[in-house]
Image 1 (cartoon, rainbow, N blue to C red):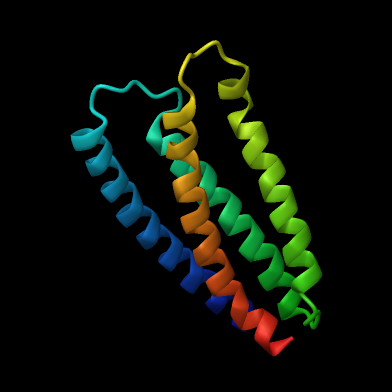
Image 2: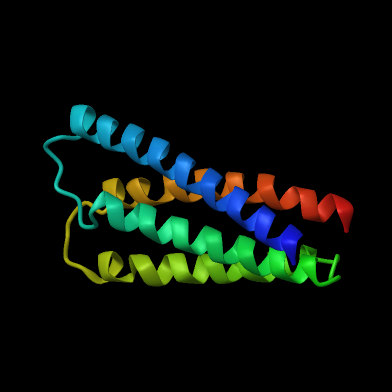
Amino acid sequence: MEAFKKRQITFLLQIIGISILLFGAHKYMLHYFAGEIEFFFPLWHIYLFHLIITLVVYSIINYRYSFGKTDVFNVFMVMTFLKMIFAILFLLPLILSKIGNKQPDVFNFFIPYFLYLFFEVYAITKFLQKG
């Protein structure tokens, strides 16, 4: 259980640090390159969604790994599929809205989505290599 807590706290600190850096860089770029565009979702909603989903996926895999379930690949694949479903549900209000140009909002969501996915895969690779 100590190993679980240590990995969890380490990951939490890393994901919060990366989130702050990504959010700051994203906010800066939007301010200077897309200042005139009004987005459907506030940027902090997008980053909070990604932070929570990534933390939940990692926590579930870390928990299973800590209790002897070293075959975490299937769990990772199912959780990634669920993450995609939650992403669609998150974007559903935008998809159903009558806004003309949805492309900036979609890019605004999916660029951090893939960055968080990359970080998640990087962190979970340790479990997959040991399993």
